[in-house]
Image (tube, rainbow, N blue to C red; front, side, top):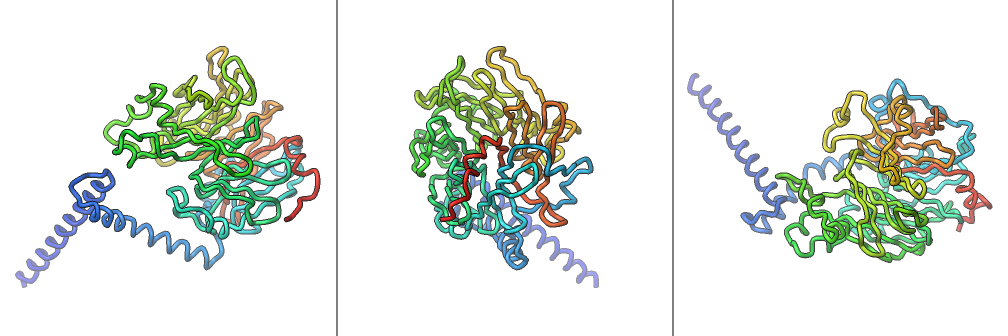
Length: 453
């Protein structure tokens, strides 16, 4: 009897020991392969990385199968009871003459769509429902397109054009489509991501990925994402692309790019997420200069593409920021998420009552102010990722709380309305960088019924 018990104990101990050895060896080989170590044969390294991705691939396949059975995209759905806060107020429609260009999960189509909503009565004036299956079939496979399906694809930062077309980024490409039809007018496959802004000459400015930023350092080139700024024509042609890593090094900013990494080199050192275009010359910038946000450096750059010069940059007081804008000839604004990257919510915020902030930088006085601090604190705007803020011509503010599917519109002194993108009774639908449009901005697209062609 004793020998049988001893044998079982020995067997279990041996099995646990073998399991620990296998797990440890696998973890070491995976880390070694990811870091590009030379101790593994390249073919073995590829096999190790492939095997390490297998569990997540199985889980992803199961989720997609479930989504197709029930007809709902779980990747675009938040659990309402986990996300919604007791203080939230859904006050929409509201007495506001503007329009909401909403990008997010649509209750009617159960997919991501773009809607132009009249805020005063909540009426959908235009709807663009992309044929995601057809669009994704035409998008080349890149690191930005991986994992997207017709069930979970979403339009990022749609831009409304005067004729009623919209342009947006999705799955690593830029797409232009007309109203009413799902088929795109054109697709630009150039690893494009995050924001889209219209420049004063009619070109589109967005963010991309380059390949020449670390041309002289093969080890870095193989491991680091080389974020870039891109200029695109309205016809869908890539006009220019500037590697921002190369731009920073050409401007002597090696330390800011690479000197803050410590032991672990982040494979996404910059994470560019928004670019804004100066509409006119001013005392501190020239027409066509770019304001670029680098989230992982908590840094803003004023970049002059005509010369390749970074004419100004500043790190903080914003933290992991998004959404930058030129306000006039001397001021810019930025939405600061004010979070610590890599830390789960709510611990990501620096204080228990912490949240997003909208900061205004005055280049004349070299000061940073927060004109909406009390309003944002009262509304408890908090989004660890994403986030967008527009300071409006009337002095008010529009904010997207991206991670929670909520939009808010403030006057200079109070909350005017708040809209939650409810999806059914138990969920909140994802949103992806919507815009507030004034009546003048929406008018050209509403001047006549859309030509559905």
